[in-house]
Length: 203
Image (tube, rainbow, N blue to C red; front, side):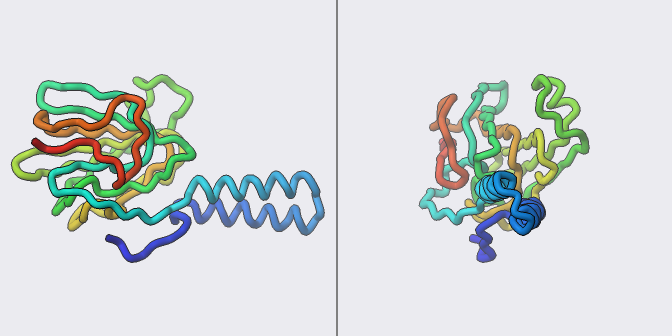
């Protein structure tokens, strides 16, 4: 596991500094209610970008959730099973390795960060990134579709142990394409937590 642990994810540092400066200025000027609002804004921002440490005990055949959120859809495709997770503003946005990954391929697509559009338009126009790798002759792929904040990225793709921090996405959707032989352990509507919730097992 990564030893460099930060209480607040670095993707939220700049915003936290801005909120803190505005709060201090409003407090210095004794702006009353505005100062209180700025304090609430700072507190909410710090909550949004919290970065807790997690310790879980998972076996080598399990595939854990790579990010916090809610399971929105499960599709049985021709050669894979697709599990879709929605990550909201108050979910933790840290992306963690869902299994041991020796080396993965990262593909990125530049685009917009549309939020209030229909899903088809968002998937077509929004920026996205994809992580894929091979394990025991099986192919795994995770597609990330950020929708609002421009802080989403993958920053590690190799020599990852399950649960290692490897990226960040605050608001958006994640689609996991797993082998058809997988025994899926989640259902639509389930709340999942990165590294702690098991998505399924390879049979």
